[in-house]
View 1 (cartoon, chains in turn blue, yellow, green, red):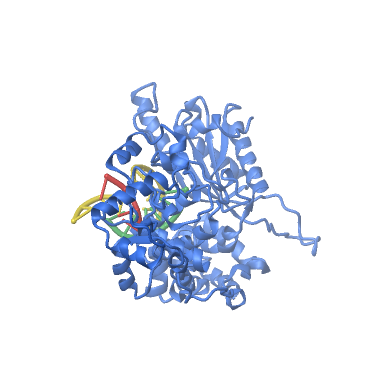
View 2: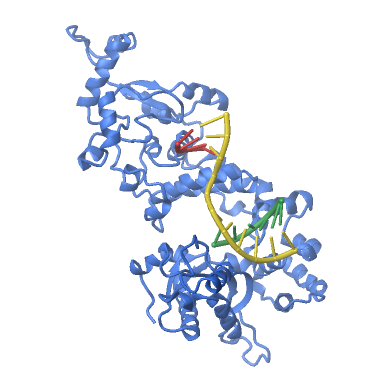
Amino acid sequence: GHKAKRGKLSGEYEDGKKETEESILHEISTDSETEDEHKPKSNSAKRKRVSSPVEQDPNEAYFSNPYIKVLKWEWFTDSQKESRVLPIEPYLLYQGRIIDRPGDPKTPGKGSSFTARTKTPQSILERARADAENDTSSPVQQRSNRKLGQIGGGRVSAPFQTTPHSKRAALLHQTTSEHDLGQSSDLPEMPPWVQNDVKYACQRSTHADPPNAAFIAQLDKIKLARLLTGDEIGVRAYSTSIAALAAYPHKLSTGREILLLPGCDAKIANLYVEFANYGKIQEAEDAENNEELKVQKLFYNIWGVGATTARDFHKEKGWRDLDDVVEYGWQTLTRVQQIGVKYYDEFLLPIPRSEVEDIAATIHKHAVKLRDAGIQSLVVGGYRRGKEHCGDVDIILSHPDESKTLNIITDIVASLEQESWITHTLLISTKTSDRGQQTLALNSSSTHGHGFDSLDKALVVWQNPHYTPSTSNPSDPKPKNTNPHRRVDIIISPFKSGVALQFSLTSLRKS
DNA sequence: GGGCTGTACTG
DNA sequence: CAGTAC
DNA sequence: GCCC
């Protein structure tokens, strides 16, 4: 495994001059036997059985109902592009019931179907309007002020089930009637942030385990592939759609539903239909099983290594695992990347909520000691979203007296280092304090207020220094601290800023 | 068809 | 300036 | 990939 090589390489590193480097060296040479636990292994054991065959017709359900369907032309061209029959659902513009020709009673069926197809546009319009008024299960959403009833991302204009007048009403008065929004369709009522076109993710709440987590997990795989291949735009697109889906409080039932969400369009809806039919998404599975991407993901998970460097390690340097990185590239790594490799496994470990709380309490205590009891602290990030296990710890510190926050980040890090809670400082930003001082010098008041929107912060490595010596060897003269190292972000916020405002709304830690 | 969050640190 | 992280 |  890479343990041996990483240990071996520590010798080369002994020339390192910085304190942190020596610390790395020391700990590398004393790593425990648990180190290999997160090394990638053959995944043959966890390969899942596919329950439904891929050949299943995605449109079966649609062919078995008696409605006439009008699809966007893109259904055909997209299907041609992909050389397969795509689900029609995302392209569905209109479904019309087959009814008897007025004054020409006939039994429903073939004849009526033929009649429907040969209707003149005018009479189709009339029937469509009638459908829209009478049929409360009209399949086409007509309340979205964004899509105006249009399905899919193309340029086809709105279908004819709503009159221009009713569309305008929906656009201008979409909030006048709650009933208006939940009742005229077979889709569930949209949450307010959908109805009102809320633009920012911070304006809606997101739950720890959203109802559509399984679908989101598939999208995340595609997003990761976009990330690793350097498709930043793709990452952005998937990020926004995933964020909307994560905030969506209902279990999705149809692809059309997705089209109403901001940042989601035909592509995502298609993926959902595929997911609903097969329980998986081929593109996501392919990305996950791709050998190149697997290696690049391994490197990407090193803190301080991004997509570009991960690809470089793989394609230019020709490395395949962490052993290679340590053996052939250690000296070329940046300081933080060395730390990232050193604690590769530990940083991937989930952090229990209780430990997050302990860490936050320690930081808070030090902050109070350094300033006063006016210090307020708030844990954000995964913890605040209610997750059982967090990837890192994010804590915001503030103080009603803004002068008390000046340079506090430096003081806190020093204090926590002093007590050995912080083992490494990955990065510390004092921009705001720096500017604040300048402003103070020129202008004795109002240190903030001219566009101070950046925050002092420190990204550190944390380890609980209190440990119980190994029970297996209680008389060990040099016992080892096996508490896992954690990633902790400490952020300082001016009290009046929007972030600090959350203090009044969420669980404050009182001094 | 053009644009895509904004900012700070490191090397 | 490129790369990274939040 | 989605939005304007």
